[in-house]
Length: 293
Image 1 (cartoon, rainbow, N blue to C red):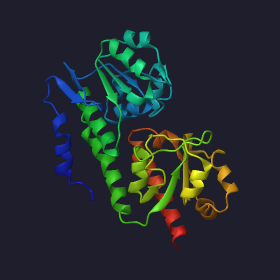
Image 2 (image 1 turned 90 degrees about the vertical axis):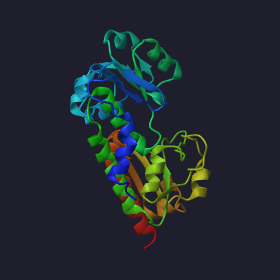
Image 3 (image 1 turned 135 degrees about the vertical axis):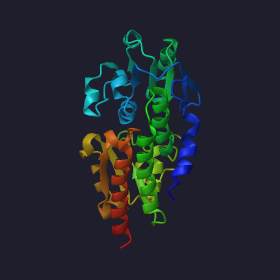
Image 4 (image 1 turned 45 degrees about the vertical axis):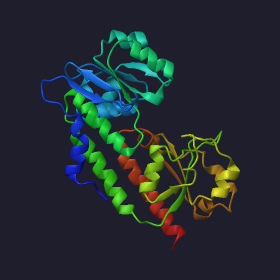
């Protein structure tokens, strides 16, 4: 059921501060980040953070970002200060940011500690739920003096619409393949598992403890998913799922249900995530129609 607009406003209320006052918001670790004024020079250390900042109208404040921050097109002009799992700390310091926004699990703890030692305010982005993605945009809006409620509200409306559309649907067994060798998936602790559930799917490995567990081929065969999903940049199918054609007894193979999502959308906690969840829901609905016709 879609939450009333008034209820959503109450969720966001604690992060709103008065104009001209010190701005503050909690990051995703619960740490309070306080600035004497809205941030004007931001270092954004993840593609999804850069997307969120552009979505709330603060893209022109970004003075440094990471290698794969390529959306929107304007992000390509932002200087690069990091790559996967590594950062140029000297260059970050030279940019004199008044706010650093970093993906908590995107870098080793030692790097996060090094970033904190630079002495600039640090906001850790680590969404655990789809609602957290909307909350992040609202909080970053407060810290940048922008109105993040519009982008946050649009994201949440799309997610809530999908949740309502597929509520009560016959469950479809889904295996989400993160990696082929070793064979890895996602547990129920991951945002993508929440997305599968709101589409009326059931993550066959939701009960595993690690957030990205390694599984065996035998375990997948035993779970007998009706749909197998993976993700690649641009949704371009590769060879990752072809191995399952060897197992005609597998429900997904019998139904011909193998789907490649756009990794740049489904794996980033930005506004486009909601759109790609719609693609996932459509794939699950197609599988449902084939499995239960």
